[in-house]
Image 1: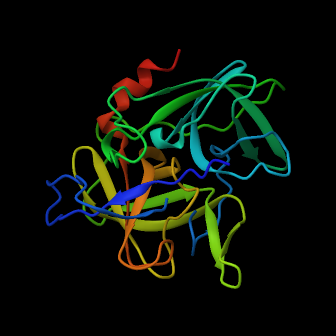
Image 2: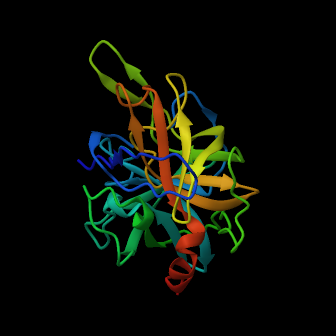
Length: 253
């Protein structure tokens, strides 16, 4: 089973001009816990089987364009989305659950791979076959000015786990959730937000949306925690969309 996890870098960050380069790693964790239900249909889940009992969402993504029977979804590069007859599917939730198969996917050419903690290139674009005539909800990419600044309001949306069941240590997944928060630090390639013991990002949120002014300004990559994953003090990090915007637009054909 795919886990869709991402390890976060421990960063010595004291100013927004500094980058989030990894020094060490403590946990490979990357759903929104402490959030609320989200009706944003443009944020979808990636699953390994269509409607099957094992179709657990392993990563999140955002539909950014549809043209006829094709749609394009942005997610994290480390999610490892696969295509073809044995490939992955997206789960779209509105009044009912719908599944559409991934036709092709491309990872950013500079992404250093799973385990590299390369947040600034942690992105891929998946093309999906919309076979039932549906018109999917989309979220527009940010422009060249994403209006990101220290303490700016952002919304995180993902399909990850929302609670840990303490008895057996399992994680509960309850669908698409959102969390309104603020920019903690940022640089030209990355963006971060605070995680607390009561709210933040966790397993399965990787590839989810960082939204500001109804635009996709970032892609959730992972979290850095100082205690236990998903509920420990620390911060989440993501790729800043404006840094790869031109590359993403080149994939939309």
